[in-house]
Amino acid sequence: MNPESRTARLLGPPGRGRFKRAGVVASLALVTASGVVGPATPATRSVSDRTTSAAGGADRCRPRHHEVQALPGESADSRGCRGPRGPRGATGATGPIGPQGETGAIGATGPQGETGATGPTGPCVALDADQASEDFEIRVALSGGRTYAGIRDQRTGEKQDFLWTDLTGRPDYPAGGTAGLPCDVSVNAHNRNTTVKRVKFDVMTTTGQIWEAACVAFTTTHPATLNCADRTGHPKPWILVARQPTPDALNGGV
Picture 1 (tube, rainbow, N blue to C red):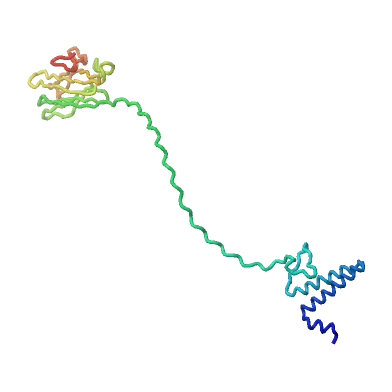
Picture 2 (picture 1 turned 90 degrees about the horizontal axis):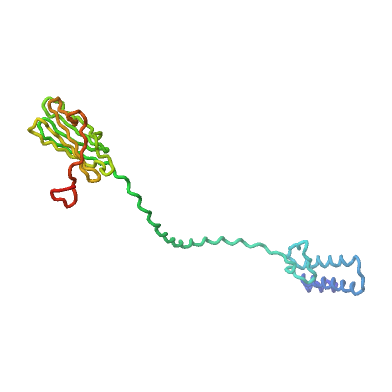
């Protein structure tokens, strides 16, 4: 048996690989020492590369084009081969929602607005009635600043409708200024047993004055009517009642 073959068989595959590499290294050293540099040098390096690849066994990594190939005696890991990628880890659970922030404080109340001006006084409304005779009854009404006198016949067979006379257009009707405006009314008719049935209508103004108008109720007509004119046919004026009520008066006045 060839001594070389016997030696390789005794060493086994790893031993033979080392033996061959040792021979290649010895040859390379011999060439270098003899100063021969030529085409044989790349070939020697190529053989060394193939030998190293064979020695790696299961190392099937292919070096990148920019990486330097391993020299004899280097391990496969020194060439930067990437191992297989492991499984991707599971996505973590969503964390709990944080606590709600505090509610902001309520702002201060703004200043109160100024009180508006007092509006004008509304129109006065009033009504009064009197029945001093079995033949008729009297009404006086104040509405919209105007004063109305009314009469209604009560005799059997008469049409019992109110007949109204507007007293506002009579001379000296209180219509403002110091006299004021009418704000209340009253009627006085107490001529039960006389042939001339006089009726008086009074108004109280906004300045506290009392004004009066006089009329006559006629029952000779059918139905009964009011006549507020004098003997010449002119409308009787309103008159300021003699003496007006005053504070602390006692059977007096102004």
